Image (cartoon, rainbow, N blue to C red; front, top):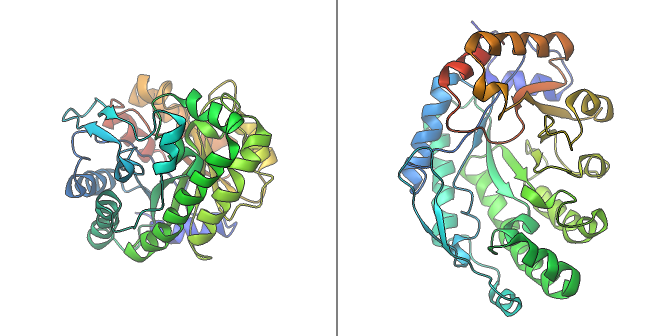
Length: 332
């Protein structure tokens, strides 16, 4: 029997205290259920009930941020297959002028407020809930079919993109406040591929990313529990952690050879908590439960439970066996 509830355990870790055991959380898509609010909520609640993670990262469909601006998808009804994108809001430079601030009562944004509300009402109050929200630059990136198009416009038409980011940020500043009202304890704030040097420079991220990130995170409230997820290879982790973001946790793919490894991360991140340690595409997916247990024991021997929450570097594959996740849970 656990000595503390998930909220108590996470609170201890965030306060720098050693908990009764390692905390852990994992997250994944349920593609066949996430095309409606009720399905998304049901999937998240099922996954939480199955494993009793120490916080829930709500994993909505990835493009919910931009559907109200005109992105059209064909829903997948297969658990392991992503939705198919049929139409993008931006295909040429002039299309950016159509991206204006939208009300949070827009269909899809409202749908996901209901997701948060349903989950909060049906889950244990002692479960911290983080709602996924992409950075404004990442939201803009979901509006184009080719990332290189946005990268080109950042370089050649910076004023246009800055105006678009203002519209997106204004939308989600208000939305973030409503997510908290709906029951979210904070944000799982993700950069997607834009928090890395594959498409833009750090100087560009400081201009087109940082100030808008900061506004969204501040709008979540002083008491928010925020996790900053830095996606992609060649990421800007070392630069990002130098920014005084109002977040308590950092998460990135430390098993990617182009990124900062976990042991170095624990040396350079001294005032925040790290969520990670599990190679989501490697041993978490491919190993046996017995091997998983061995890997978790190695992590526990090497790291401090007051500094590390065990989790993946990004959303895990739906094909990760539940037996492997249970093996993680059993060794905490």
